Image (cartoon, rainbow, N blue to C red; front, side, top):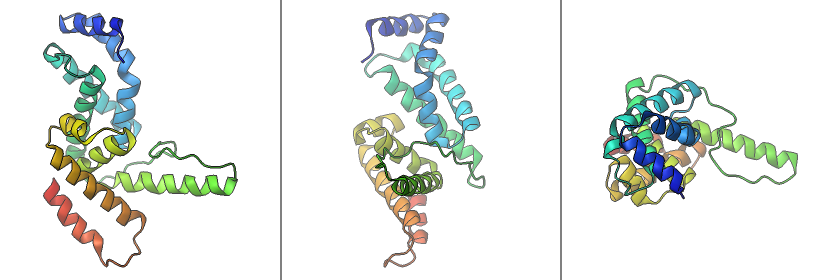
Length: 200
């Protein structure tokens, strides 16, 4: 919950108080950066996305009406900035994957072998996630990492709730196909690529 003092900072920032906005940036930076990093996959690009996020937020803070929490509003801007950034960068660049990226909330037992297995699984999940098209990656990150509802995802990405569900289904399908390529369904990747192209 956002405190009364935090709400006061928001109101002051809306009125043009630059110090109040800077204070909001300091208090929300860690969360905004974390989301950006999970969407774009490396630190340098995440910093670029965060910078663009706060530039847009600064320009639009006067229009923020408080219907949702500031964090929700910033998440939406971050997701949009990340999607735009990744679209410009194109698909020919392979991101450096960070071992510490927390994609799944796993709870390994004390057995070192089990911890190693789970570490391998997390690495595979990170790699598979980074291969998703940006729009599909955004939905699966917001749903499966941030545990947001389909409605909230739709609002933050400015799409319909039905579109959010379709993208999530396709994203999970792509992840399964990449993590478990040997199956009885034949050549799935080609079909998934065609579906993803339509989803974009």
